Amino acid sequence: MIPSKSRSSEPTTAEAGAWADVLVRRRLLHAVILCPTGQWLVQYQPDGPIRVLAGAAEVVELIATIQHRIHSTRPASR
Image 1: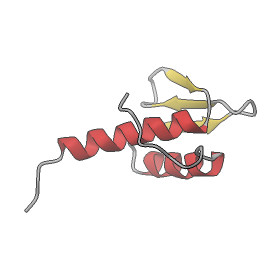
Image 2 (image 1 turned 120 degrees about the vertical axis):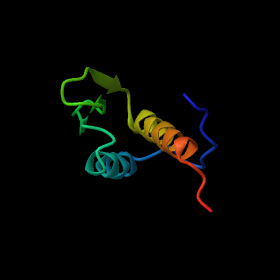
Image 3 (image 1 turned 120 degrees about the horizontal axis):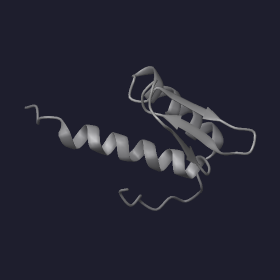
């Protein structure tokens, strides 16, 4: 994973959920589900394996990695 920049506070569950919703709506992830334990279940494709993330910080880290990959593979437009 790409090291994240310093934050003044830990990501909240609401922040992680909002970002996860965006990535699911844009079909960059198939599903992201918050469990009662505070863990998150992430699935990239409908028939793919399920990844378990420990909390909101790991979800936000994953999302940042996905965004970085998207932006670094886009051709420069000028």
